[in-house]
Length: 132
Image 1: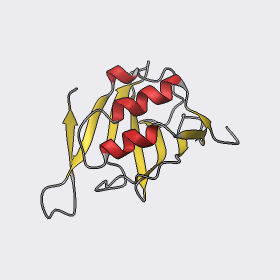
Image 2: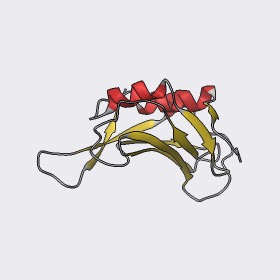
Image 3: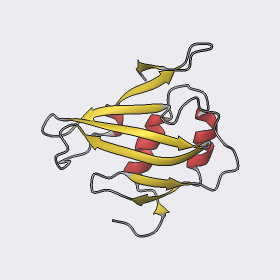
């Protein structure tokens, strides 16, 4: 595991850029944060702690405003979720459905995006698959 924060790898940046393609509250501010984000791997699966120096908090409606799914080489589903805490990118969580070792992470272009939509006055959002 990484012991200190470092610049994103090309793959990590591409995954975050993919997650920030669909429209949702706070997306534009999160895109600004991407310019200064650094990462530290926290789990073998590739999960990252994220830190950014931005002064623009994102007005997201929930902790995980966007996530994505893709298949590993063995066909098992991999979920990727962007966690936002107090308006700032905090974690890129990567989980394989059966908790086995990830053989080949899905290409960012192959990820199926899911955005949490909130209807007026709703306290609970509904997941909505997004095509880009």
